[in-house]
Length: 284
Image 1 (cartoon, rainbow, N blue to C red):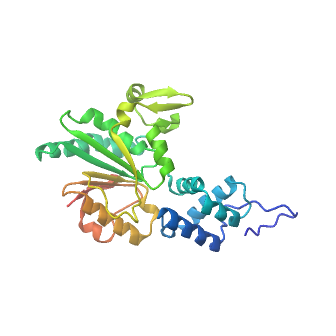
Image 2 (image 1 turned 90 degrees about the vertical axis):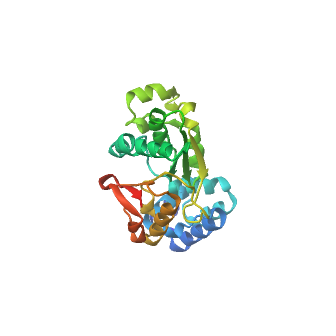
Image 3 (image 1 turned 180 degrees about the horizontal axis):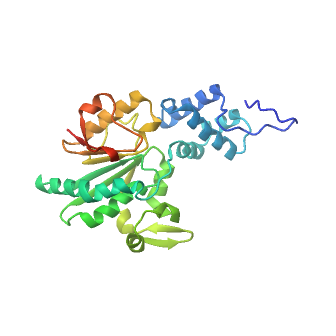
């Protein structure tokens, strides 16, 4: 319960990260039971702040009534999941990384697919939020890929709500700040206050719900891009996820991490730095 004094009899406002520990453990239990989402692996302070935001958004001044709402309201569970897992994104975020992907990495992967007699290049965007990252890959590959190579881009996230937003492909203009004018003109259409991505690009990406901590299997891919997601997990969980990424990639496959992330533990033996500054690694 909130104990912030107000000087009168009105309920105190629910304050940022001052989320009671007992109620926080109850939120963890509910999310694990109903969504298979292990919140205990996340850093407490950031997570508690986001939960508190949902408490305030639903008009509560303390945590306990919100817990009762979570038990009975599936929509609020989805809203909380979206608040906990979404990260700020935009098309071609970190342009230097996408520049290397466009000039070096993706052309080499396309050559390898053809040399091996395969017809499909598989890419997996992990923690894709509202879809900007996998759609950025699709925009690059619609120019780079020869007609005989099929492009299969998978975007996954733990939140069903953000995946629905990704499928819609409607974005605020600021999310397109790094999109070249020619691509914006060709592949986006004004709609209300936003810009909708053309269906031709949306069709290149499929979205699925996926929990990296509990999924029994990871999809096979030639390139995995997982940026600014591992930072939310403990070191032990990061090591486990990185080893599972290695198992999902073929020899020569590519792993792209966020600028603040790195290989840990046994995964250092499984990957070699391809472009270290951009956190682009090749499976050994």
